[in-house]
Image 1 (cartoon, one colour):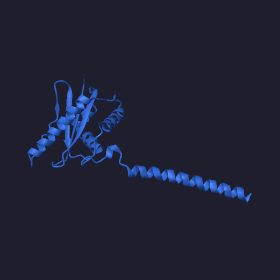
Image 2 (cartoon, rainbow, N blue to C red):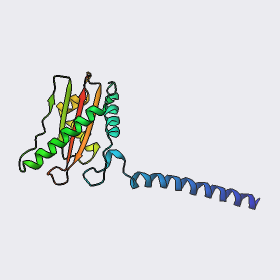
Image 3 (cartoon, helix red, strand yellow):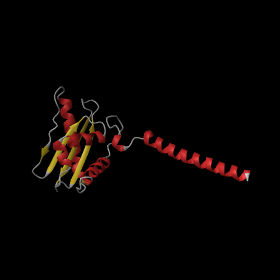
Image 4 (cartoon, rainbow, N blue to C red):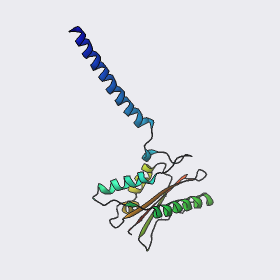
Length: 168
C-alpha cells in the first residue's frame, strides 16, 4: 500500500510539474515573442504585415455588424506610394508639418494618412480616435482595403502610414 501511495504521489507530482511547465512556457511565449500588432516597425529589419492590420480592422467592423473589407494588392501598392510620398515630403521640408493629405477620390477611394505610430496597434488606435479616419474604417460602402507602413529612419516621424479603402 505504501508503494502505491508513493506511486500516486509521484504521478501527481509529475503531472503538477508538467502542467506548471506547460503554463510557464505559455507565459514566456507571450512575453518572449512580440505579437505582430505590437511589433515596433520604427526599427531596421522589421517588416509590416498588412494581413495583421486588415484582420484587426475587420474585427472592429465585425463588432459593429459590418461586413469585412477584402485586402486589395493594388490598393496596398497605392497606400505604400502615398506613405512614401508623405515621408519624402517630411524629409524635404524639415520644420514643417508633412503633407499628410487625406482625401476622397471621385472613383470611390478614401485615403487616410498618418505618421509617428510605431506599431500597427498604435496606428489602428490613432485612426479609430480621429472621426474622419474612423468613418473610413467603418464605411458601409467600402468593400476593399489597402494598407501600408513606410519606415524612414532619417525623417522626423520615422513611420508613415496609409490606409486606402474603396467602394469598388
